[in-house]
Length: 266
Image 1 (spheres, rainbow, N blue to C red):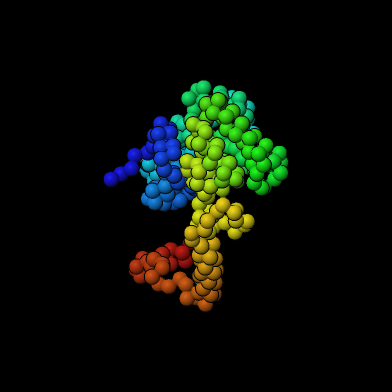
Image 2 (image 1 turned 60 degrees about the vertical axis):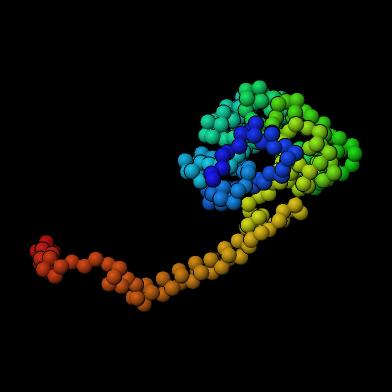
């Protein structure tokens, strides 16, 4: 039986009833795999959403897209951009801008998802790439940020690298849908990057990530095979082994003779 794509209303009705699954996917192949695997929610780049084949590959995935608001322009620019994304069939828009921008989006019925805890674009204020909310005071700051997002009209928030006890306490006290990235199972959805799940990430692996396959090793193997194939091609050209008769088209002998006579006259 085919799945039906959930709405914001549907996801809100699921809050506290079961853990949802969420992935950051970057390609059409990954989106199709997420669809076939039964993933609930995906975060995708705008260019993937704009791909005409996207919804054929991922008809039932609740799809959130976003962009750094400061790369788009003013709040007005970001809101106009959000409407273009909704028109392209996004289900929600990620926004790490200020509460005023989020409120303006929500007032125009844009389903907007904010961000609390470790926010990459604001990490200088919280000490860099490390956990946030490990003290009572900093945990309260996260809770206040969630309250602000709720008051602004957001539908949810990514909560990143926050102690599990803090994330669970906050998730149970807000109507927001909470996407947990390294914040434990007390939230509404578990959020990982497909690059990490597939073992494609060759750099630092976050503590909260889990590797299920080793695509990097497969890519290395394929690169070795790619180089070997190219070397064999070079050798064939140098030795005359390529092209063979089956790789070319030949002219009928009588036409060839006629052609050569005309060249000689010419």
